[in-house]
Structures are given as C-alpha cells and as structure tokens.
Length: 164
Image (tube, rainbow, N blue to C red; front, side):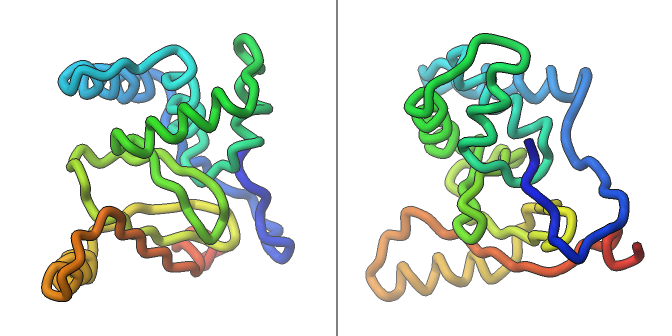
C-alpha cells in the first residue's frame, strides 16, 4: 500500500508505520478527540486512519481503497474520500500535494501549520514544526489574510537512505 520507491533506490526500506498497542492507542485517542468536539469516528473513518497510521508514509487514495478490503468489507471511492476529508478537517491527516497522497497527522495541536520532510527514496515522511510556519502565518495576517491552510513540503533523502 505505501507509495512506490524511487527507481534508483535499491536498498531495503524501513517501516515508519504504527502497529500493535501503539496503533490501538492512536485510534482510541482519535476517537476521544472526535467525541470531545461532538464528532464521530465512524468505522470507515477509523479504518482509513488506521491504514494511514500503519503505512507511516504518504498513501494515495486509490491505494487506501484497495487496502480497505483486505481485512474487511470493500469501500467505494466516495466513502474513502469523505473519510479523508473528515480526517483532514479534524486534524488527523494531511494531504501531501506534491505526491497527491495523504499521511496521518500525529500532532494534537489544532490548526497547526504542516511542514513535511519527504524522502524521495523510501517515501518516509516526517512532520516538523519550523519557525517559518509561524512567520508565514504572521506575514499573512500582516497582509490582511486569514490563512486557512499552510503546508510546506521539502524533498530529499532521509538519514537511513543517505547511509544505505
């Protein structure tokens, strides 16, 4: 299900996904956060979040659709896209525009600016909080903009792939 690796990348790749009790804890925390704002983490929404957390890297929507049925009933594209939309709005997922893919957000801050380091070899994606994000928000406010979304994407090689 994770995205394909770069063609020149021929070494073993590492899994950055969440599994076992950590996965269950993440899903339970998401359910609690939803309940706190009078929202529901329905079964399809929970399954999509679970798949994103397990992947640990960006996943295309149609790969989520294909993976959806592995351990349960299949899902139609609108179901998965609605779940992704909900997860984005609630702060549980981000869309990586340059990859046309989605990644789980494990930060609990609401409305934070998202900044990502994306490995072009293995696909690992790390969410960071650079000072530039706050500066962009402040600059937008100074220019009279009420920014609704700030996403920064930086591509390169992760430490594991640089050493391989």
